[in-house]
Structure formats: C-alpha cells, structure tokens
Length: 181
Ligand SMILES: [Zn+2]
Image 1 (cartoon, rainbow, N blue to C red):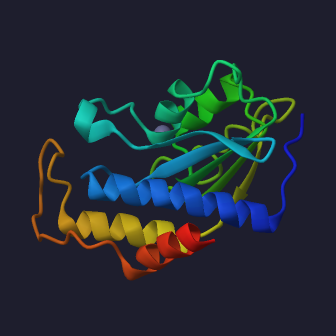
Image 2 (cartoon, helix red, strand yellow; image 1 turned 90 degrees about the vertical axis):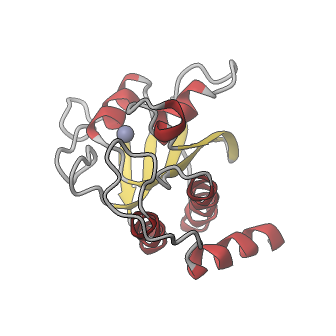
C-alpha cells in the first residue's frame, strides 16, 4: 500500500518530529524525534530514550513503534518522519513491520541504514519502503550539534561539559510556527 503525501505535508509532519526532538534536547536525551503518520493523522510520536532507560536500543523509532495504538498493528500504509536517517537496526525493524514510506531530515553517516552506510529497504526483492531525504535536515543537524556542544552528560563516558542548554534559535522559531499554525 502506498502512503499518499505532498511536500507541504512532509514539511508539516517533519516539523512535528523536530518538536519532539527538541523535547528530547530539553530532557537531556540525544535529540532525535519521529512521528508515525497514517491517513494524515499522527498515530505515534517519540524521541530517543537511551539515556533515561540506559538502553542503547531505545531509539526514537523503536519507542514510537512500541507506542502504536492497537488499531495500528503494522506500519503498512504509514509514513515515518524522523529527524535523522534511521540506523541499520531501526531500518531493518521498519522493514519487518512493513512500513510504506520513510522521510528523514539529515543523513546518518556512521550508522545509516537508508542509503548512507547500507540501503536496506532498497536492497531486498521486491524493495521495501521508499525513502525521501533532506526534509528540514539542516535544522535536525543544528539540534544535534547543539546537544553535543553541551555534552551528553549521561553518556557512559562524558567527554565534554560546556553547559549549552539553549535550543538553537532555528528550532525555537520552528516550534513557535507550529504552535501558531
Ligand atoms: Zn536506530
């Protein structure tokens, strides 16, 4: 099943994913956020939760999958909007769940499973979900950068402590726009 979409809709839902990532930032989690959309409605939203749970598999995508309502047993017909390209682990899980479409912001050069390191959904026969990259990618990167400048305090070995607790301006502006419109 193909998930219908338009560029304006992709932008709108990616803003929601970024807002969720900004919430992660404020909670001291690696700021990656996602929303799962079916029939134009957000059915699940989540951000990375690896620090609070001390569980390295609690990526935004996995947390969102676990929060799906019972009416959405698989991701068939769904679009996942995530601020950073799914890693190989998540990209694979999304195939098992029959995701139709993935839209991401910035590439994940180290672990990306949707084109950067591997292209898992394209590499099976028939191909799995389709991917679209680069929606609000610069904003997603700025948020991650701000987080790592601050220092990931709860990482096993914090290497830096600079004390930046401010959200990047571009994210603050984006959140305002979403609230007002
Ligand atoms: Zn992942």
